[in-house]
Image (tube, rainbow, N blue to C red; front, side):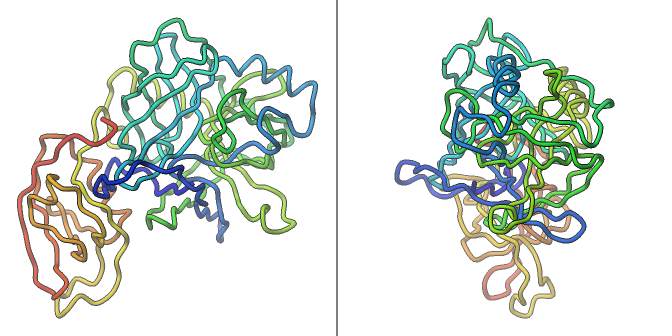
Length: 376
């Protein structure tokens, strides 16, 4: 998917014109030690293999496990109105009243989010309760939901290399009965760098479970299940090399214990340096990493503005496409990724001094007041 990595920090905003079109599945670059093309992007990371509603490769046991977990899953659809795209991912229902766990990149930058519960087939509007970008975890709240089937997250301490696992998810965004793909745990406590090439944003993820499950776009946020039927992880990213070569698949999941701890903190309203609660601060821009000389100004890097939302704080400040943001609130901005990190410290209603350089090298500064982010 175009996973232009979520934007709750560095808002992406194309002016609203035509209706959104289906979002093409984008490949997020993942580096494990060296570099590995990975499937982990904004609207969906890639998990299960095989046609929708089938299991690969073990049929009977896989179907039995999937049947136990499926009712507690959900299909997440994020509309990125400013980019005229739609992305799809997977969620795990945590409470009967509609708290849903998913990957942050699935909903980041969305102008609206809807969730279809697999158990009752109803579709709900959703808001973001909170997220942790550093672990790619987000929690949604479904509007007016009740009596939903749930998924219980097991502890991850007992997970061992060599253990058989099953990944379930909204493969290819087709909805309906989750697809399933089988594989084996190949390593533990792995660290990767996941990059959305389209948005120029990267993120470091650590402590992951590595498997050889062939993941597909749309499965991000879905469960990794043990032979005992326990949810031991949340599928988050996958190497795409296996799709273009004979190399075996490499997929990664956030351990369930890790995801459960973050989700519990978010649900309890406990903010931290990493956990952002509530609405995202919105600046109203789409940016890319920038690294070329800018006139005679010493600033050579920053976040290049390629789109501005009419009526947004950025528009009010006078930013134009082609400008390069170099700092916010005294914090240096050296790339689209760093802008995202700086913005994550702010909430709607907050203010900061924004500094940028225009196309002829002239420096500018203005105080901006952030509004609520799209998915807030």
